Image (tube, rainbow, N blue to C red; front, side, top):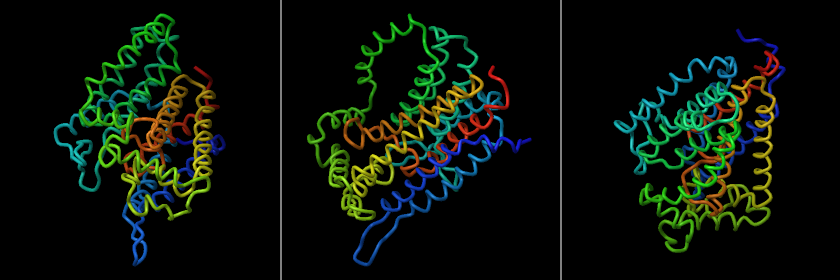
Length: 369
């Protein structure tokens, strides 16, 4: 039964920052969904859909907060296996959109199992690491990484390199938070840089093209380099103060591709300029800091690893998305949390916040164990 006293321990700072980011995202999406015509403004359906998914996410977040997060340990394995089954289902009967098979058509909406898998990996990874004593040796490191490698391999086949990378980075961040033994660290420092170049031979042709485009966008300005070039033009043309709300020419005239998803930050940068972009980045930093506080104040290891996983989930998405929009990272299809459009992603974002709020609310309920 829910203890009403827990309400006094809600992390209002995190909750407020989440609300601010979602509202900014909705406002930005309204602009990205708008097309200026001679007869007036024409608005796509993305704006209304995002509001709907935000409402669903808020309900799921609230329900998640009501259940003690420690109970999640008992469902971690069944939930993880269910997500693997759904990923296998995508490979067999998935819906193909833009050449990628990533969704299951459930009639009233398209489910993207990859998003649920991120939560499953997070919860199971936290459970395993909480049970492991001390820093990770080779055996425990292998067990932990296997939790991420199996679903990541299924996601890569969709193909969805960005989400697979996100899954591995979440788990990798949790491993760093847990720590590895000195011998493991020394070997990884030597082996990983050597192994990275060999990853080139496992990439699809379009993924190799994205890396080559990142190195030289001007090599194919009307093809593979078009996204990055238009994104840089949009952000650069915003200047210091920006062009103003609904006044961005690159987005309003539809020069900027994927402006409601991967390149939503470019729309924001064009309209609000360097000043607005810095305010948004500061807001994201404050948002991450609130999650960090919960991570350090959690009263049990499982809660601490849960919050740490959520921290890295958001940290890597923010870093990679903004990096690729600015042209300093390859385009890998990772959205900007709460700013980019996405139904499944929006619900998962709110679920992640629900996990952190859950840990924060119950930090005084029991002693550290």
